[in-house]
Amino acid sequence: MPHVDVPGSRLFYETAGHASGEPLLLLHAGIATSRMWDPLVETLAADHYVIRYDCRGFGQTDCEASGFSNRDDARAILDHLGVSQATLIGASRGGRIALDVAVETPDRVAGIVTIGSGPGGFPEVELTDEEEALCTDLDRAWEERDFPRMIDLETRLWAIGPLRNEDDLNPEFVRTAYELGRANLHHQPGVEATADDLEPPAYDRVVDLDIPALVTVGEFDITPALVQFEYLAATIPGASRHVFPNTAHLPSVEHPDQFLAVVSPWLADNGL
Image 1: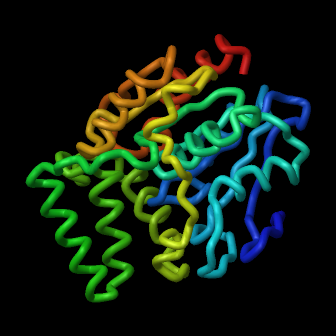
Image 2: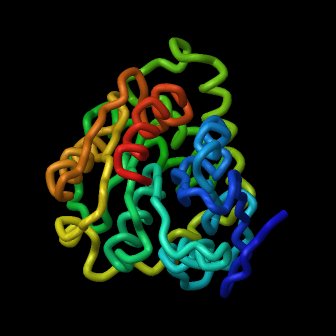
């Protein structure tokens, strides 16, 4: 399996498409691994060089609980593959990393797509009663060190969404969503807490981005993601925006054809 060795970690990555194509770097959500991009890769790789990897603490990437920078890891993948600049597509936590990379090293980022993401340093957002109840269950599972239950509750909160009943959803999507979360169970919880945060945070700096940006969110995502979506769409100069209907935090997994129908034309229109 291909890996990039960086201090304290071996980053698992995969590529698809020809290296001469416009590069895309896909950054996965915190409730998933790089496998979340499986439904998209074949289509995107037809005319792009598609790169994806498992962040530290996720999937097939080995790591130590030591200080590190998610931004440095993303750039290390690009450097290893000889890519000087790429369009970053990031879901949730992956979108936050993408924003940090774009703010810190704008010369490395040709364009950016976020999915249910917000910038680092965003003020706390009040939750609904339904969201608060699910978060209380999550906190209890963490305190009891019941990590399998905790991971499933995270999937229930984010991928299913507090306002939806999973029995009403496509069973294949529900199964995939839980599998994506459970693939991280073997990792030591809490690794992410040691990551180096960007200072000053991206919250105050995305207004200076001068690249094509597409900001997206699922209709049934939780309140903080919806608020952050509105902020990014209003703050990043010239940003395009899209709300995916009938989905929550993982629109590219739940409705990949709808996702591609929005993202592929946007990439083409911006020469990316």
